[in-house]
Length: 225
Image 1 (tube, one colour):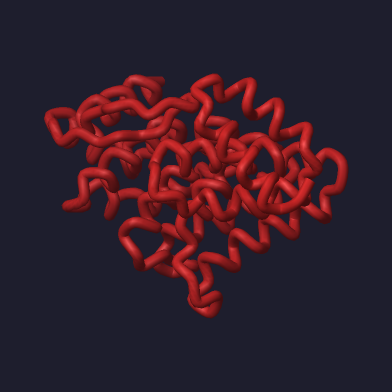
Image 2 (spheres, one colour):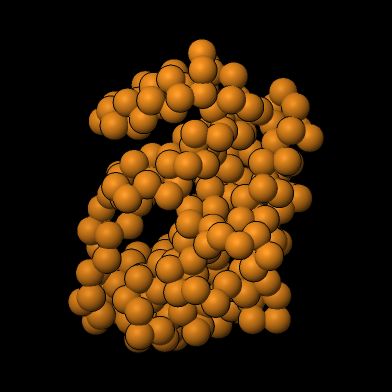
């Protein structure tokens, strides 16, 4: 199958509301061929297509890693390169895809989790762009809810986001904090319980509406000893 035809077929599958079945079909495709169209869909103007592409990228690269770990590392490095200033691009969707892949594959998570954390660390590979920061927070949250032990230190870098003027930063940081126990975030989460700003967040393969206060309250309830 040619590249254009493959891209069209994957787009049809990402438009299908039965995402689980679509993922099964995409994962039957040759992984190295499926990756390139999925990269392009991380930039899609339709938010739902973008998020489904993130999910599909996670499934495809995790599957690839089980067969050829080094090839999956190449994809990881490509996603990281997209977030490098020298790449000349913006890197939309890359931190989200990194988080999704690592949530699905433990070995890759062990190798690259610290890189994802570094994107919110001002002494690390801090992402200056606010929209990319949202992506990094989502990627961290996805990974943290799957493998919290690997990103426990992220709690040290969440306070600026929990106190941000950007409601997406506050809500996403609260979601991350809910997966990792941190004394640093507890009082800030308590302060956010009354925050009624609403955000859309992709959780369990669905777009859902949550207020920042709801996310903070859920985070606090998970972290009760």
